[in-house]
Image 1 (tube, one colour):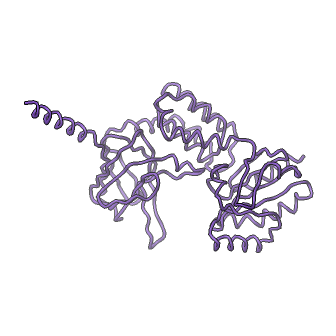
Image 2 (cartoon, rainbow, N blue to C red; image 1 turned 45 degrees about the horizontal axis):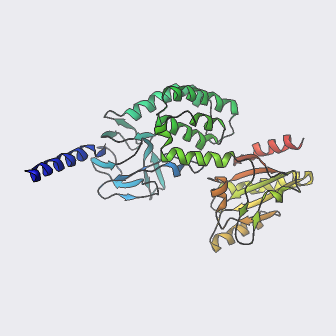
Length: 363
């Protein structure tokens, strides 16, 4: 009798966990592509590292550290999902022959059965099932519509515009302290608009459930890295080092972090050379830090610098310490450091903003 009771109990346990399995079901009757990706939304400043998906489908393969996948598309495709909390994602595809692709608008994956209808090759979609995270995301977007319309992604936005949006988020988080949707909104703001101290203030308002999440903890680390005002010691390799003491002879030092495959980096070099000629007599030093590791790419970098008549000191970040210690998540990254080794300005490819800051600082 005990044996039958045990088997019955085991059956109900298995039934319970079978019902708990989450599936993202995708209907795509009119799409002309044969495969799709599910991945994190476009991100900068290393925020892609915050995403951890567990996704699987017949014939799928992982395409990144976060568990995002490429899968063969059928009329109805079932993606098994396993997430500890809601996370944003995109559908996308890439046409190698035409070197073109498309990405959908952002949506949220969460545990539970979700049904999506992909309507066309532009990846417009409709959510056919109840989804608390996506319903909340639509609600929050409506609340923040005015503030978001005043902000320009990847440009130098006025701090007061950032503060206005974060003030709205502050009110929302106070009423919804367990909102992962609100947490990801701050992640998206950091990715698009750069570091602002107000992000850390708002993150403190979340409840224990959000604060226990991997994404929250790693996001705090990213923000703390960029909030550090003193330039860290950098060991490019065994023989080349940079520390705050190297900045002492100069009023300002501009560090240009770049890579050989970055077209805007190379296009900006003549402008940087002109800027150096204009300001070197006023106590401004320049340094290049190249994110390359292979001998072939290092040789290419030296050639590019030579062709652009770069005369200042250049380093090669063999040890990749810039991403680790400065959260360098893109190119070109320009950092201004004063004579005390303090970081006074950092921008991604905004030479006009750097020039204006240098002009005002030296006055």
